Amino acid sequence: MSAHDALMAASLWMTAWMAPPAPQVLSAPEFPERVSPSFADETVVQHVRLAIGGKRLRVRFSNAYGDRPIAIEGVTIALRNGAGHYARPMHMTFAGNDRMVMPAHGQVLSDAVDLATIPLQEMRISLYLPGPTGPCTCHSRGEDPTQVFKGRSARPGAVPDRRVQQRVFLSGIDVAGSTAKRLVVAFGDSITDGVGSTIAANRRWPDLFAERVLDAGVNIGIVNAGIAGNYLTRTGEYPSFGEAGLARFKRDALEVPGATDTVILLGINDIGGEPDVGERLIAGYRQLIADAHARRIRVFLGTIPPFRGSTFFTEAGEQSRLRVNAWIRADNPADGIIDFDRALRDPANPGRVDPRFHSGDWLHPNDDGYRVMARAIDPAIFAKPR
Image (cartoon, rainbow, N blue to C red; front, side, top):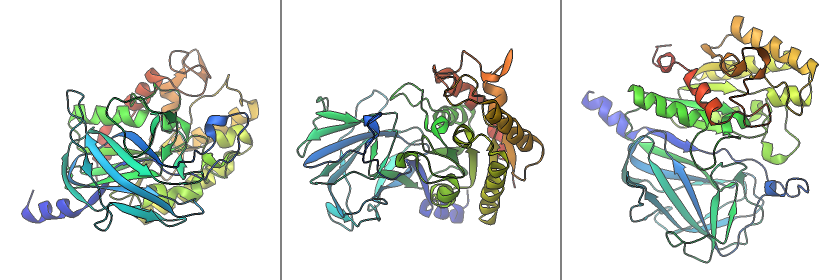
């Protein structure tokens, strides 16, 4: 690397972890765990794993859907070492202050700190919320429970007073000085968000693909922009399902710092909710591809996996899925495809997921299914010049 290239790499921010926020859920009698939690005089602890390492780090918080300012104090980060122990917490500041206030419908970026991290670095982020916050701007399914402690401190090893499934206000972590050559954004729904995988084990397909490329010595990163319940063409039944993929693609893929590529796997919820949606899905994919190409971001389309046996399966929906997958394989303007359908389907019954690979609902993969998805992607496709 030349001196100029090294200087550019040191100053280029790239997202190392993300959790796209979604609107609040105020009531969900059938699914109370989906209700957006509120906080007052509580410390929130969240665990993450970075896709790429770097020499500097900053943290992003979002109040995009909040109707009031949110005060956050005492933000600390602590890196986990190979023995499973966390280092002494490092305090993060905001314009030099320990306390910051996020405006309603806004976001805040921490000051950068000099901190060396490596790919797949695990870390713990703690923040104090004096509150009351009202229902939080959250990512609805963290697949790694957030720990909540009363008061200003969270002692290592202490039992939390409660746990919530959401990612709380934390929306992203960026690094500078990374050696990664490309950054891939996995854009999708619950199958990308990792529903059905082992909790707190980092076994979503983007996690497993990140491990695969590291083992292969391929110098790229992948971050997860999946939102459980997300639709491509419209908003879902619950606000936590997020804005339509067409509406959030700019924020959650194209504007991700350092993004060079995106893998899109989105559409099964559209099919489940409105079976005769195939042509609108294709039109939506065309729009996403055009928007990405306008920013010189490459697009890899994923085929939609089987869903026969799931609660929202219909024969009409299956015909839409087959139509969309045929278009993806033969006629799309993307830069490449990833055949998740072929990887997950049962050879004896291609309309359903292989029984070895689903988590019990004939829709969401289990750990083995997510591993099969990660293996379906050739890391070399991201190394090829456009």
